[in-house]
Amino acid sequence: APIIRNAGIEFCFYVLLGIGGAEYTLEHARETAKVINRAEPDFVRFRTIIPLPGSGIKAKFSSGELTYLNDAEIVREQYNIIKDINVNTYIAND
Image (tube, rainbow, N blue to C red; front, side, top):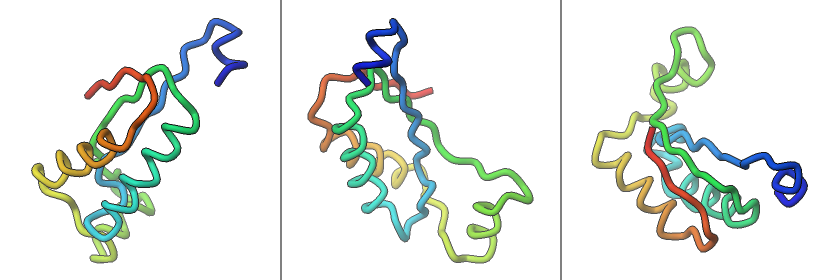
């Protein structure tokens, strides 16, 4: 991140909420917060996954390997990420 900032470029992360399904939501939240803390991005932007037809991730949801999160679970996943962030960054929902 320092090299990017020294070049005058803002450093932004996009987080896809729900990408691990219900099966991996806690792990996704914990590990995402770890990466954010280590990288110290200027911005963290949250989006909810909507898998495209024909994509590998869509197949995992369609087969039942992963289970979609409902709205409350998406908010809980985002909360679990944010509560573990301990660096100065701007949070946005797009």
